[in-house]
Each structure stands twice: as structure tokens, then as C-alpha cells.
View 1 (cartoon, rainbow, N blue to C red):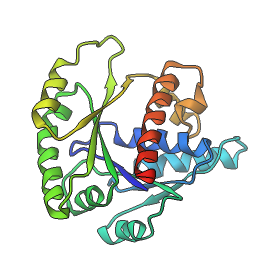
View 2: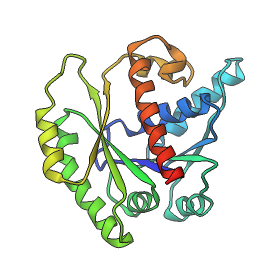
View 3: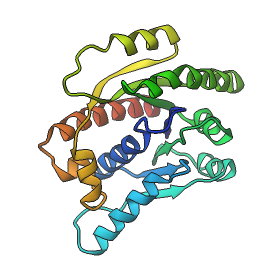
View 4: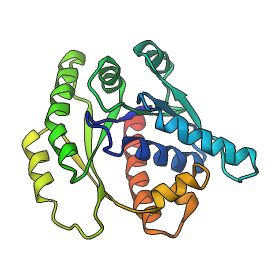
Length: 224
């Protein structure tokens, strides 16, 4: 089982969401791995903090995170894909062969979308790349829009709703992730997730809903 967090614009929240999902699944007893294809290797850096905290006695579980720097490296994990492990690809924020391979081998794709103009403006270009991959593999991979990093005050999503509708390529996840300080605080507390850092907080509540939604997508693929 492989899915990707992907958008052609950096800073859309892919790495944070990949990290949080992986930790959520890990704490549910699932076998999970992050394939970090981002040139910044944010998940690798976060995992170093987590491993450091573990070595100092933190009662959190270690996570398997691999740095992927080539299509060959990514393909090696895809060739050993199975339903026994959830592999989450954190795709870099640019269009290259590695991004396109990640899209091609994914069972589904999640694309974060915020009200940042640069993130919104980059969506049509990313969608074009996604359609080109569809054509190459001769099938349309399920792609889901996730509203991310939204102000807690925002209730009007008409601008992004209209764009997603016009692009006619995505389904929309029902979960919405709001801007919350706990995401950053959790990382600096030893590479934790928000559900580990503040289980009763709003960020934890919102992200747990997303994790449940994604877990249902995974079950749908496996039971397909």
C-alpha cells in the first residue's frame, strides 16, 4: 500500500501531514514507513529529533523514515510493495521524474490546499502533471484535495471550491486542518505528533478525524 502527499508547490504542508499520518498509524500498531523524496528531507530531520528523544528516554515509538534521492531508490520500495505495510511518500514541491514516479506508483494521492495564493496558483500546473501521468499509466489514480492550514475563523471556501470543481480531477476529503500552534510545538518537543503532544487539543481532534478518513481509504484499496 503506497500513497503520496503531493503538490507542485513547496510549503503546502505535505511533510507535516505525512509525518502526522505516519505517527498516527504507528501508534495504532500499523507497519508504516515514510519515503522522503523532498530535497529538504524534512521528515528525515524530524525523525532525527524523535530518535534523539527516544535515546534520552522518551516513551514514544521509533518510526521508519527513508531518504529517497532517485527514481531507482523509490522504485525499489515500490517493487516490494505489499498490503502489510503502509508506505507514505512525501513528494518534493517541484515537477521532476521522481514526483511523476511517485504519482504513478501510488494507490491514491492527497494534495494539500490552503488559502495561500502560491499554493492555489500552483494547483492547475500540478493537475496537468497528474493528468500526464494518468495518460502514461493508462489509468486515473484517485486524487483527493485536503484543505490544510486554514484559519480557524474561515468558513467560506468558495474560492478553492470553485477551482477544484473546474479542474474536475479531484475528490475532496471532508476533514479540514486548521492553523494550530501544536504542530510546531509537537515537533520541537522531540519529534512528536500532535496526538502525542496534546491529545485533547483541537489540532489532535482535527488530525485524528483526517487519519480515520485516510485509514478508510486504505481499507478500500486493500479490500478493493
